[in-house]
Image (cartoon, rainbow, N blue to C red; front, side):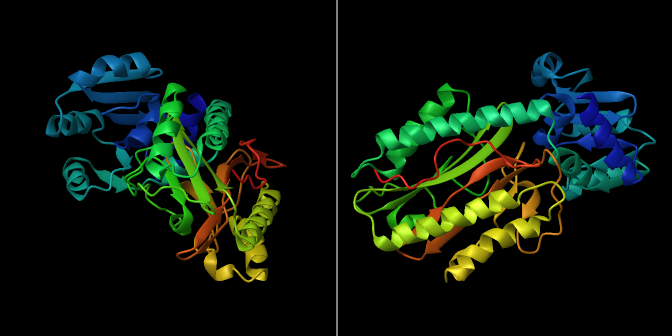
Length: 353
């Protein structure tokens, strides 16, 4: 925690600010060890949490070396914050216009940007990596469960229920990602051609390609993996596309190293898919950072300017999506090192159930 706070303040000082104020729960957790309804303050003297009475007990118990101040909810907490950071140069993660304007009325300088938080959070420490590895191992177990449970006639919704029950029993939970109504992506047949398909009541059929994208949170941290299964008698085209995506992902994993541009990882994946004539069907970036959120910095895409650093956590997930037919995606979460530390051990050979 000490190193995290040191890095946060370094990036804060780079913006000519001396105090960080966190409203978002991910940033509050990273700064204090507490995830809840509260405001976090960090300066060179240490960390403070402003929390309503219903959160004070848990904030004191779960936070690490933090002063905890009780406040009223809503405007009361804002008044308490302003009193606590008077005469400071503030950097805050909130982009709420009314909130920022209220702060600016009472404080000499307020800058609204998430930059210090996302910059600090890009590189993971030993504890974060251990949690990510544990979460990844739970996802691997869930893929073993897929092999046992998937069958013709089962619905996407039924498989999701089985998988989420298993996950929660092992301490892995839905991320609450705002862009989806479902905790997982389970997409069979034509649905698998939609990269962010919603889980439906469609039943699996003979010949389906089934994309299972597991993105779950364990002790705050998100691991993300995808495997694509075949069911019954699958087509020669499906086997061909699977092999292309598999080789594309292997090339991407091989390209992941410290000092390498994120664009070059995307290039490595995209080159293989394009060469085989499926370039227009690879319709998203190769990957993204993971951590306390599903999508963090850096982005591994065609226009990315970012450079990989040791102990960043990223995904490598090329895919091919043939509209109204099927899709294939293979994804691993990876810790950047001299050789990419792929956190998922479940096979990437095509399994036909």
